[in-house]
Image (cartoon, rainbow, N blue to C red):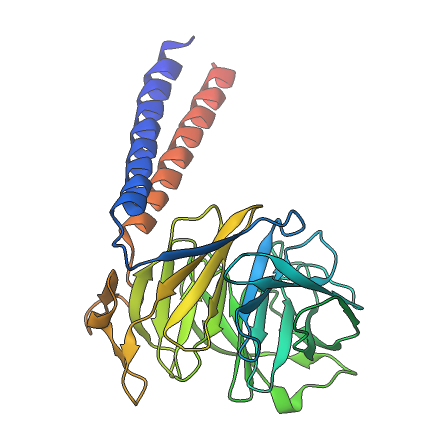
Length: 336
């Protein structure tokens, strides 16, 4: 082996190994040291038909019932899941074509919104929102009302949807933070494309899901490692540690408004219950009420950065540096 190659390769691999060890220690610490009252493992969804859960919604009309959907590459099916046991108690097959379903939401009128809005490659001219009455238990075949959506000259990858107060909010998933788009429910037209309006670039990095909290004006955003609680004006109130999961893609508020359920892609994945901070009558969170939460000061960054976020970013950066070093050495060897 070329000595110059060895001088770069060995230190780079040692740095990468060190970072991996640190990441593993953080994950183990998060699993071992979490207080008993947060988060709570509720059940395991072990039905093999659910392998890439990418959306979650908890029923407000049917006790102990939630809905989930698979990611791209699966049939257009909504699974009804018993929250306390993880058992699938119904499947609703949608008479609609889907490309990349990424999120779900229930509105105040009991309608289920299925967001076929994923666009990892930024190549879709239009996405779609499929709307149906909440199906409940049992097997059904339903033709939803489908609203085609475009973003003008944008093609964002949207993996989170919030429906409240007559507005559909679509949240872009992007590494360095994304945009929030809105549609007025009353203006949606099933016969033509509906252009979503970009209202703000206030979405934190890598948001994989979101949920409106009942009995309040709050919204909870999900990233791979954190839950960010927002107020009615989409301003951050607090950041909560999310349970360590295989690939955290889902969050759904429970009817009480005091907790959310979070899940993950993969087969036989658990549902976790995470307590939310208490809120007063005006909807302002009392951030000291929830163990493991971090209040946001006026001088702090808009979205608190979790230590694990920094460590994971460091691991990625170290890996990139090693790859770059190898490429540079390879080019030099070719020129020599």
